[in-house]
Image (cartoon, rainbow, N blue to C red; front, side):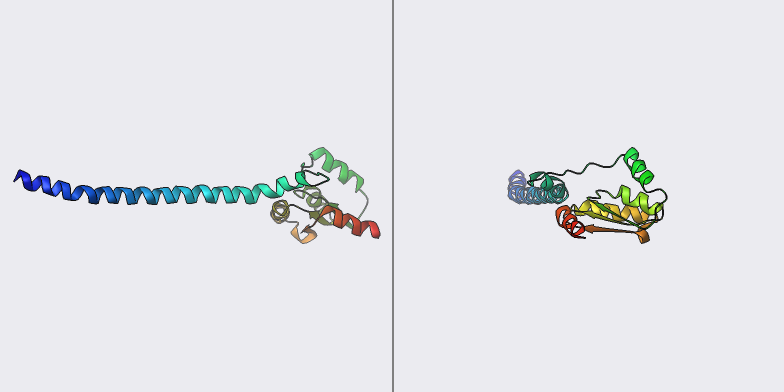
Length: 147
């Protein structure tokens, strides 16, 4: 009888080892896929913020302070019409001007910031008075300079 138990345990041993190896392989693939997906997502988010630093003329994103926004709004007092913000970043100035009744347009190279600006304009209820475009600062500036 003891020989029968030994044979059963020896027969089950390689099968259990194979199942454990297969389970480790699945976990290894899941971890690899998770790390790879995280790195691709990180690359997609970071690239638009890093690439301006690699250009010949570096213009990084620096958010406007509340003092700067108030200064712009002070300059716009007793005026009406439209406002164009070249290099609008996260759209703070465009949204503040739209809240004061201006038709405001923002141009920004970073698509993540443009999408965020559109979301903030929608959240603040001024999306009908704002437009945000993904465009290069130097191309837009040359168009406005010609007029």
